[in-house]
Length: 127
Image (cartoon, rainbow, N blue to C red; front, top):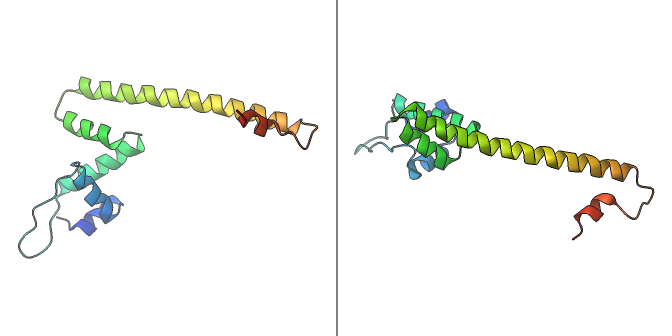
């Protein structure tokens, strides 16, 4: 059993993160005894670690909430959510590669620019 501070320490998060997860309904807040501190279980620790791993993979808290609900469901539903997330990530990667190509081109234009007054990068940002 863990107090909130011990739970946070074990999960390598702040106490406010635990409270935030509770407010968002991702983590159940244990009942507080009349005297003493709330006691969190190993299951609570597992849940916080699950949330952090899912965040690391790029899932939003809303998506994590869906994953937690789907954890009692079949794998096909979870797979569908993961495939949707993968498609979003692939779109972002394409956008980042396009942005990189644009910046490489602009930096090259700037390096080869004979004029000190007309910067190709600034010109490209003008409407």
